[in-house]
Structure formats: C-alpha cells, structure tokens
Length: 358
Image (tube, rainbow, N blue to C red):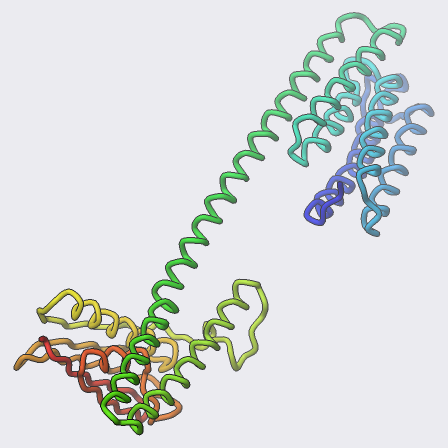
C-alpha cells in the first residue's frame, strides 16, 4: 500500500539505494583484499554493481513520477535481496560488502514500522546468506556467524521499529487529547458563554415586553442581532483555522489581535452568582481589548461602595469602529443584574459598569 505519507519516505529510500550502489562500488575499488587488489574492480563485481545502480535509478524515477503501489514495494524488496545475494557470491570474504546490502533490505522494509515484513525479510536474508556460504568454494565455516549477526541485526531493527510505532501512537494520542482539551476550553470560555449571554438577553427582551416597553425590547433585539452576527463570524473563522484554511487579511482575527499588558485592582464582596458575573465581565472586557481594541495596556478596576459594585475597564486601543455599539455579552449580564453601563470610545475605550450587590 502506497499511502501519501509514505511517498516522501520511499523517495528517500530510493536515493539511499543509489548512494549505496556508488559507495559499494568505491569501497570495493579501494579494498586491497579483493581478488584484483587495490584500485581494481573485477568484471563480475563491476557488472553486478552497475546493474544494481541501474535498478536503483529506475526505482527512483518510478517513485518520483508517482508510480508506486504494493506490488512495486514487494518488487523492490525482492531485487534488494537478489542483489545482496549476488554481491555475496562475488565478494564473499573477510571484507564482503554483501552484509551492508542485506541490512539495507531489512532497514528499507522496517522503515514502514511493520514487524511481520521485517521478520520475513530477515529470515530470507539469513537463508540466502547461508546458501552463499554453503555453495561458494573456498568459504569456510568461519563465516557462518555472519548469518547469526545478520539475524540479530534484523531482530533489533524490527524491535526498534515496533517500539517507534508504539511511541508515535502514544504521542499522537497525547497530542489529540491536548487538542481536544484546548478546543473544549476555548468553546466553554468563548462560545458557551456567548450563548449564555444570548439567553440572558432574550430573557431581558421578554421582561421588557411584559412591561409594555416594545421600543426598549426592539433595541435589545437589534443589539443582540449584531452581537450574534459577530459571534457567527468568529465561529466561522475558528472552524476554518481548525480545518487549516487560510484566512483573508480582513477576517483573520488572530493576525489582528494584540497581547496587551494588564493591571487589575479588585476588592468586592457578594453572592457567588454576582462574583461569577463580575469575573466574566472582566474576562470579556480583556478579550475585547485584545481582539477588537488592539490595545497595548488594559486597566480594570473593581470596587464596592454604597451597596453597588463599580467596574471600570479602560484600554489605550483604537476603540470600536461603531461608537454606538456596546459589547453585547457584557451588556446582557448587566441587564440581567439590573445594572447600568456607560461607554466612551474615542481612540480608546472606557467602559463603566455599576451593579447592585443585592
């Protein structure tokens, strides 16, 4: 099976196979223990290595043009074993290069992290190596241990390949778990809170209609609609970022966000529900200063006086594009708590909120 993620790996193996041909040819040429002596390469060895080089180059061009499937992988492994055996026949001795060719066949198979093919190729390599020792004249049993060393090498390659596969699976699991936690935290702190704000805003509209104040309810619905539209755009951008789709310069919130320094001074008391709303207001104000105001510094002051909690959020950013637009998520909480909110946005933004403690 030639999966897309293996195409680059297969090309790298093909390049390594070409390098093996050239290096083996050079090493046999300068090896003084070969039949021809130093700086000599006999005709059989030269022909075999040139054929291996031609096979290596042909395999590389086939893979580079996308011609690759399971049959090609089996064919390449078969040729690797064939040439390793051929090199063993013509160079068997104390400094035979065949061992490197056999190990290359095992490593090339093990690069895909599958233990069964590694075992199969190792067994075939050992069997072919023993066949060369048995059938070649002048080769003593001293070289029998090379087959044992080859089997040990194949075992180690298979073991480490399997351990690498298990380790990569664990890493992927940890990465997936961390990404899920990050997404869950982002959705909970962002869009879940936004939906809660929508619910609070709708409850406010319902209360205004029950009090026969349709104009105020209409204003609330208008603000709610613009807020939902902003959140909708933010969700679309976030989903496109998860999908790896590039954002345009006008809609990339991450590119337009700043990372301002902040200072918070807070001293207040009250019920836990009030404290939760105040903390969410502070968090939303900080996010607005970063994402929309592009501020460099944010000041948040919360204090209690006269039965009310006063919240002031001020930054040195560019302000809101629409000075009449209020941060709707914050406004929904203020409305639910029957508080009051005022905002100034003229090159910077200053948000002042008063909430009753009871």
